[in-house]
Length: 331
Image (cartoon, rainbow, N blue to C red; front, side):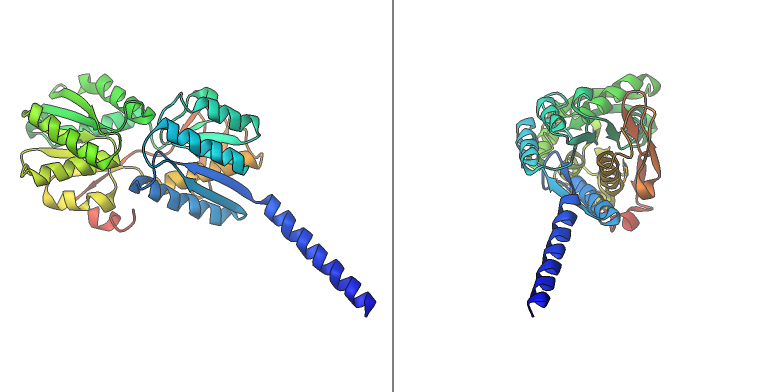
C-alpha cells in the first residue's frame, strides 16, 4: 500500500513537471495593433490565431490602445514586456516614438518586428509590408483615375494620423508618381486619425471647402468607409466618388450604392498570419531576419527580407461589383 502511494505520488509529480514544462515551452506573441475595434486589424488577428493554431504551443495576445496614439501603444508594449512575451509584432502609430519601449523589449530577449505600419529600423528586426509601397501608391492613383471622366480632374486624400508610417509612405509615393498621371490634380490631404467620426467630419469638410473635388482617395479602411458614408448621406452619389484601401465586408454597401466603383486591399488575414509565422521563426531561432534571409511563412511560402530590412507580401487586389459579394463574406 505504501509502495502504491509512493508510485502514485511519483507519477503525479511527473505529470505536474511535464505540464509545467509544456507551459514554459509555450511561445507568447503580442500582436499590437494601431487601435482596437478596427475591422482591418480584427481580420489580421483572425490570421494570427490561425497561424498559432497551426504551429501549436503558441499564444497570440491580440492587443492595442483604444485610440490611435503612440502613447497608448507604448503602454501596451510595456505591459507585454511585464507579461514576459517572447515576441512583439506591432503596427505602429508612430515610427520613432515606440523605439525606446521596443529597445527595452529587445534587451529583455523579446523578438520585435513591425508589420503593416513600420517602426524605425533601430526599434525592430524587420518590417513586413503588406505590399510594395510603390505599387500601393500607383494603385491609389489608378483607382482615382478610373473614377474620373476621361481620367482627369481634382482629387483629395483622406489619411489616418499625421505620424502613421505606412500612410505617409503611400501618400509620398502618390505624390512622386503623379507625373505619370497628368490628368490628376491633388488638391489637399486631410487626416481623420483612423477614427470614424473624425474621418467623417474631415471628408465632409474637404468637400465643402473644395467643391471641385470629384474623388476622395482614402488609403485607410476607416477613412474610406467614413468618406463613402458622407457621399451617401449628402446625396452626392454619382457626383463624387470614394476609393482607396478598404475591407470588402465593410465596403459592399458603398459598391452597391454607387459611392465607389472599386477599391483595393490585400488580405489582412494573410498579413496577420505571416507576421505571426515570422515572429515564431525568430523566437525558435530558425532565422535571424537579417537582409537577404528567407523566412518560412507557412501557407504563404517564403518571405524574403530586402536590403532595407523590409519584406513584402503581395500586390493589392481590386474589388468591384463583379466580385464584392464573394469576398465580403470572407473579410
